[in-house]
Image 1 (spheres, helix red, strand yellow):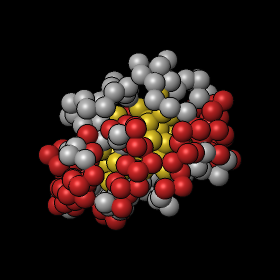
Image 2: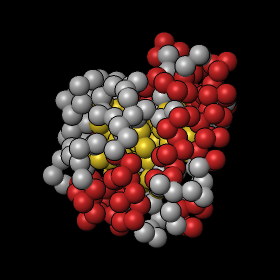
Image 3: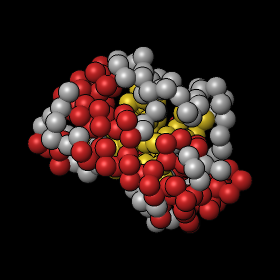
Length: 232
């Protein structure tokens, strides 16, 4: 791991896919006050992935509960039609899937033209070479460590080898690398050692309800920070 990678801040992003949807605004406020760095919003369309979550209007309705950034993961296809809707709803980062359409470069340009940070996501079975041509157009790479569509899945450890290749490919570009799926205090350290600095966690953060949020986030952060300075 390079010294520049060690300098990139570790961020813990609670995934509100695991929140209580009957009190979504309250849960988002509570988890951010408990130490979350960004709100991770999973948008699913029932087409690109086998599940449906919610649309921009619901996201907009909870945007006021925190000043912290909204990291919006768009698991939808086609995606271009909805970029402005989610930008207007309060997204700070918009991440699209490399597998979701044929015009990824144009989509990333659209996101930046909307004044938002642009992210590119790849599924566990997608090679990192697919996104190499657009590295200069992204601020964030999201490596999925589960197959997208559902929360609570088991961490796919072999993806970390791909992450190491991604980190080398990124080199000194100003790009954060994010992981989503199965992140816990037990897996956070190996994620950081592989080159990840943004950690999305759903079940591991929200388990136990609001009284446990701070301790859950702290446990993930402690494991991640402890791994700094080592590599695998």
